[in-house]
Length: 382
Image (tube, rainbow, N blue to C red; front, side, top):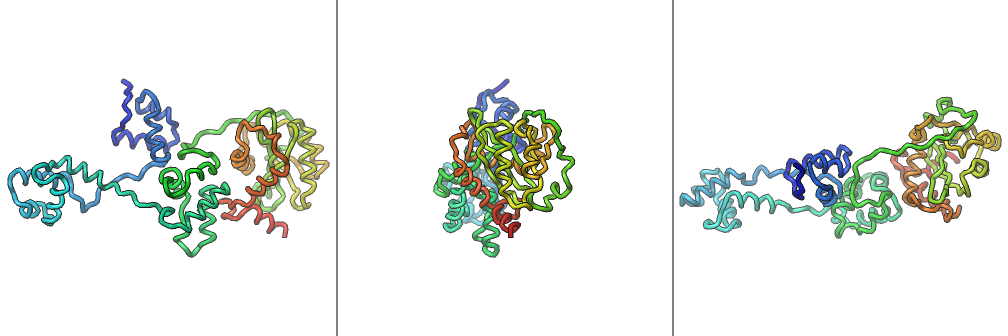
């Protein structure tokens, strides 16, 4: 029988968190725990910011339930505190404090005393960001620039390699945002996270993209080995970022440096897209014009004209394989922070697109050893 209880046993909570960490959604977890609706599961997750709490353990020095039962029996038998302590192998002061803090000899009950001790043990320690103002200020500053917690963590390690007090993990930042936000980091800073969520989410699947029929395509499998190995700069990945009302932005990512370029395109037809790409690519130095990898969208149907105009060979991904342009797919995900789904992209000028590209290019990237794409490209150019 499905129950509507909102409380969970310790075993159920453990199963809830295991399923959440395994990637199950709230509805699936509620169904597995035989809950009539998912609100109870969501409340448990939201209370902890979607981050599984550390399992609680009693100190080995703390009194155990069986010891408290011995104290209760000793009181009932009229034994002195010193005698009870001697039987337990404990200090008389330990037994005396235990009895006093739980109502005295007349009101002492072992089960109640044990439960109250477990509750009193909840003494949350202030997190590192609450205790270190300089570190908190730097983290908040970078969050306001839309840096991810992982980027901030990597940057701090590079910036302060010898100062452990100025370093922390990205998980600590997430915990401070999702769990310990009150009085630590302003809650408004959560809006700067790429997803703007209120808690850590379980990982889900990705949607498949449609296919375009393009004549005389050159398969990605025919690319030179230097492209796959990112051995030399000048190999790009591209795609269209789609918005409301059939509006689009062309995105280009250089594979070695992860440098991003954004192009305003008035429409999706192949002549417009290819023309805009060719005009932009021709401005690049010759050694940064080697190849372009695209998906199978029809906007690149006139890819031969692009190659003639730029001398850049276009390679096409396999059907239903956007992961073959991994750098570009990742970048498009980052861009959704600035251009959410359902946004009319025609309202943004090329100047604004250049500003967003600059912001991405000045973010440290984990895959670059927490250097920035701008720094990597500058090294290539000089």
